[in-house]
Amino acid sequence: MKINKLYFAFLVLLTATMVACSEYEDTVEPSPVVAAGNPAVRFYSDNSTLFEFESTDEFSFNLTVVRDNKETAIEVPISEIADTANIFNVPETLAFPAGVDTVSLTITLDDNTPLGKTCGLEIQFDEQFTNPYKVEYPYFKLETFIQPPCAENEVILNITFDGYASECTWEILDADQEVIESGGPWADGTVSATSKHCLEDGTYSFKIYDEYGDGLTYPETGAASLVFDGNEIVHVDGDFGASKSVSFTLGN
Image 1 (tube, one colour):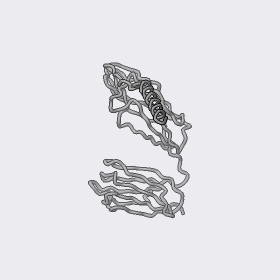
Image 2 (spheres, one colour; image 1 turned 120 degrees about the horizontal axis):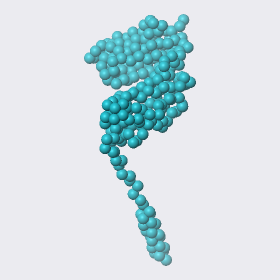
Image 3 (tube, rainbow, N blue to C red; image 1 turned 180 degrees about the vertical axis):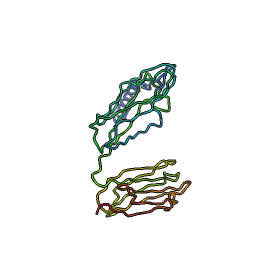
Image 4 (tube, rainbow, N blue to C red; image 1 turned 90 degrees about the vertical axis):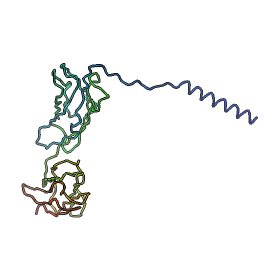
């Protein structure tokens, strides 16, 4: 009897396996076919993916778009895939005049764009005008950030690099030695960097680091500074070695 039960269980398992195999369907889709003469409209690879503004700036920016087969004029539809804050004004189409293979797409932000908040946008071109096999893509993701006005002390950080910006980082620490601002590293070849920081009255330390340990000295000699109200309140020469710390005070 026990053998019969095992035999019956084996038949049930075998039947279920055969049914599962018979219900399997190959769902692999064929690769898309690109028509001859397709313009392969796409976003240029060097477009920035982050656009930062001051609150007094004009809220607009340009993206560079390129194509192949430039002989004829075309109008390319644009679709918004995502607008996280519903603030972006994107044209419905982008025009390429005959003989032109590179144009700018201008995007503006609403006046009610929130300050101090990162907002995202994703757009794409109509697939009829694109080539999915290109290295550059027919869709694009970007973020914007509008710096709020500073109600405290606006301090400007300036760094001139030596050629190896990937080795450089910095911090601003408060009186309790807590890190409240930081930045870096940057891509090698970056010449300089500037950023604004809003700090309350108090005593701080500015620290700059070089991962290699030779400061900002090769192949060029760089430097770092903090400027407040038009005056340089911190200066660090490039030969600071692995790190350098300088204290400064804001307010009375």
